[in-house]
Image 1 (cartoon, rainbow, N blue to C red):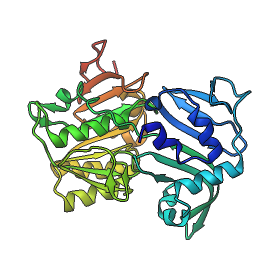
Image 2: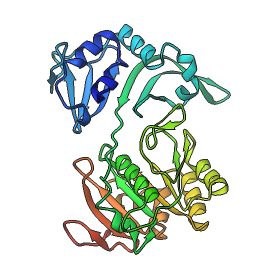
Image 3: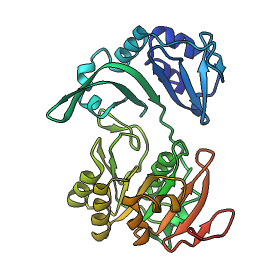
Image 4: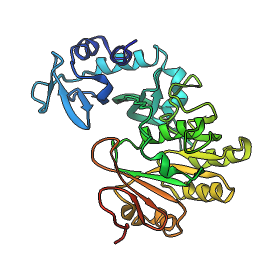
Length: 321
């Protein structure tokens, strides 16, 4: 099944008809957003487009198809194979992962019991985030991550939609499989939002390597502790750290002699130094490599070591200078 066909079959009949006519390359489509009473949106190459009834893409909403309540309801039925109850556990997390590793984020009225989200109803918004697996995209950074055969504690710093998860995914694959700079190592992945392995019915849809163990839909901090105690990983990989609990788990992992590869939202090392939870991490030089992504998706802007010396980038300078 081609990527476009794999995606559009989850939508309501009328939306399938519209999306079938869209002539853009679906390998470059990042998101498709549905909101009841709002224009149908498609995000491609970091740009938003309004989709018309004829499947043409416009930069203004005037001719856009307006998503109806029945269309959104029918789309949810297609996504869940007409059994939303079977996905109740995933709905508590706010998303459903489908075959191919694509993640369906949902928003609506949450049902809360004893302070915990039990399920979600009256779903009014759907965000289809297309999974992008780009084998080899980590090639430029691997000589810095695997230095003299040793894996370095590495933090990828990136604004949204700049490819940090895609880069981390390929780094995991190469660390697990081994390459010219480093032997293959056992990697433990805490995939809290099912974006790295994109497990569907327990089976990873993305290639994370033969030596990789995955905890799917598991909170990051708890998952890091579990992997250390049960799977003896040499490297642990997590996406989007940031809470105080995450940082405590990061310290625990490093103190156990396990290497850590992670991502965080930010525009620079100086940016994360301004965040109360993360500033001590930079000050204490917990990470040995900082990979900065910026601008075009997947563009590696700079790489620094723990002391702030630039190892890669157009301008040689230290962060904080």
